[in-house]
Image (tube, rainbow, N blue to C red; front, side):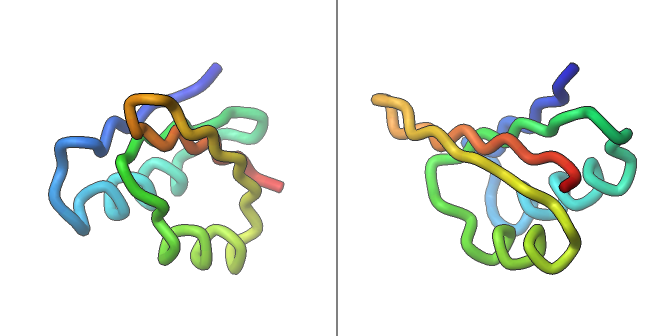
Length: 71
């Protein structure tokens, strides 16, 4: 199962805040999907420090789809 945060129309830092809050309650084995129009480099650093892994896919419309889970 995956949870989705659509941050494409949100202003910073709201997508980051929503993502961090969702990760706090993410059960083992679940994935969080984040949709953005950018590469969230500060988020990547936070994920790396806190034991998460991610993969991202760039879509033709400019959406960056980021899949995050616990390592």
